[in-house]
Length: 163
Image 1 (tube, rainbow, N blue to C red):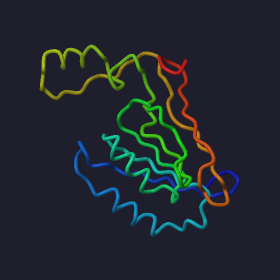
Image 2: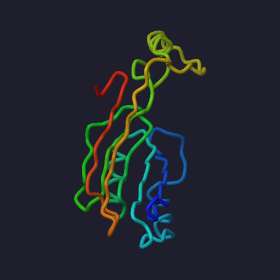
Image 3: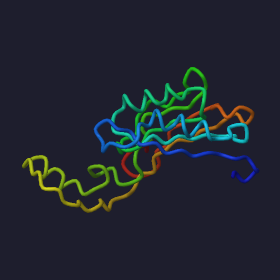
Image 4: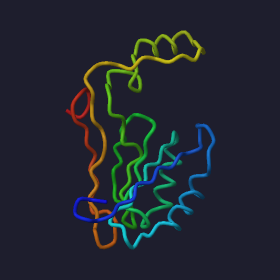
């Protein structure tokens, strides 16, 4: 519940393209929305954790006008496509990571460069990068009377990008 008494819903969906298979996100969101009392909500946020930009964009269009926002995660790189879709849903393909961008997806870059340069197929944990972090995300404002979006703005603060 928001500090002013308004209720919000946060929904996390997992994509299937190029990832470990899980429930079909397009079917699952219909189940979730059917059981959600949307008349009590002022904001419905959907985090779509998926690899493929096409799958994320398709989900945005699928939910346009039915939720406040669909924001993708997983690829670690912020996209430059924050928009309000045709029927009022805020959308961005990927919010980006919060971490050190002088890295390879937040891990020590030297290890990944070596791995790709030598075609090393051994799976081992790569230590996190320890440089200055960057905070990436979005700020979304909604219409409280219908929970659709009024605005979306990407944010990037600190570190290597967004300065």
